[in-house]
Length: 314
Image 1 (spheres, one colour):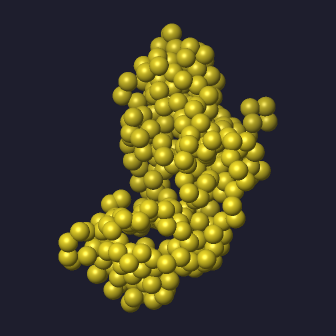
Image 2 (image 1 turned 60 degrees about the vertical axis):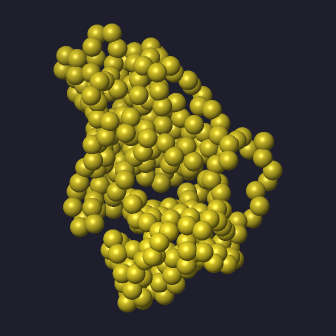
Image 3 (image 1 turned 30 degrees about the vertical axis):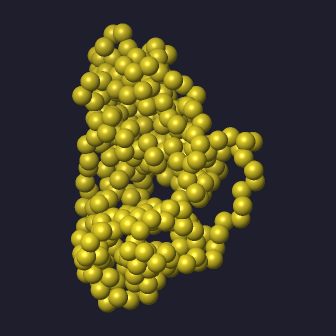
C-alpha cells in the first residue's frame, strides 16, 4: 500500500517546513501545460519564495546553506541539495493564490516534464522566515490546478455499518480493502466503508527508510490513515489491487501476505509501485475483520521474492 507511506522519496515528494475531477465529458479540453516562468509577487511570501528558487536553482551548497540559515533554519540543507540534483532545478510557472503572507503555486522541473504544487506561509513580523514551504510532485493524469469539483464515491456506507458482502469471506474483505481506496483523480472515497472493515483497535503500519536509510515504522488508526491519505488519493488518482497471496489460518485468525500493485490510472500498463501487505484478519463467526495492515513497498535494494509473485494456480 505504497500510497500510504509517508517516508516518500524526494523524487516523488518534497516537503519543507511543518509540514477525480468531474467526469471528462463535463470538461472542456485541457489547455497546454504552462512552461514559461512567471513573475514572483513582490510580497513577504514572494521574497522568501524568490530566495528559495535562487538558492535551489544555483545548485551551490553555500547558497543553499545561506538560504536555510536565513529563512528556514529548521530545514537540513542536504534535503535541498538532493532536491536540486533530482529535479535539475524548478521554475514557478503559475500562481494560484497570491496573498501577502501566503502563496500557492505551480512548478515545473527543469530536468523533466514533472510538475508540482507548492504552498508557502511566512511570518508577519521580522525576522522574515518561512513558517511552511511545501512542494509535492503531481502524478501523471492528475489536474495541475488541483480538483475544483469531485465525483461522489460509487458506494456510500452509513457510519458504523459494514456492507455484509464486504465482510462475508476472507476474499471479500481483502477485495473491499483494495477497492475502497481506489478511484480516479477528483473522486471522493467512501471512508465510512473503509473504516467499517476494521476491528476495534485496528492499526495500519507503513514502513520505510528514514534519512539515515534505517528501517522505521509508523502506527496509525483507521481514522488517522483516512485523514492522512484522503487528499492525496482523492486529488491524484490511485488504483491498487492484489496480484498474489499466501497465508495461514488457525481457528478464527488468518494471516494474509498480499502482494499488491499500485497505479495512478486503472488502465496504466505498468504499476508505479509494488509491495507486500501483511494483513491480520479475524473471523468472529458472523463476519470478517481487518485487525492489522503492515506493509513495505518494493525498492531496488529489496525486490519482491519470486514466491510472493505466484498466482494461486501457478
